[in-house]
Image (cartoon, rainbow, N blue to C red; front, side, top):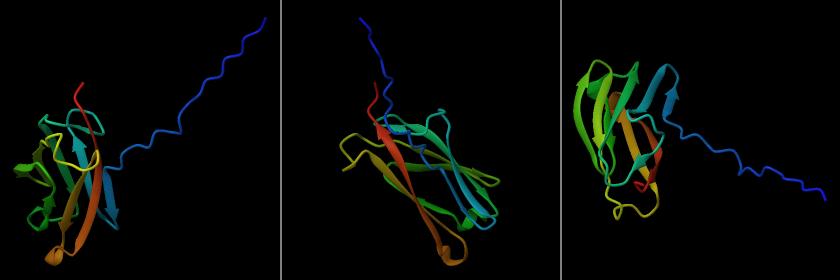
Length: 115
């Protein structure tokens, strides 16, 4: 009798895109707990690291975002979203910057329930 076992993998896990580049300008999201997702009902510190962007032209919008401060080209924030606030398990974080804040981008950060 012979048994053959096949290893089945789901399609490749897509890494969350936490970097936006436009020419020499860049916005990078650093989730300080090391994950590439956020957990519902848990405050998480997040840095928005700006390259070739004036921090005073930068705005960030999204559910549960609280700006903690700015140091150099880094905007420090904390995000806490309650589990009944979003329609999907994705937090949409919008950023705007530049002259008259014409440059814009939307990050989609996965949300998970704390285990």
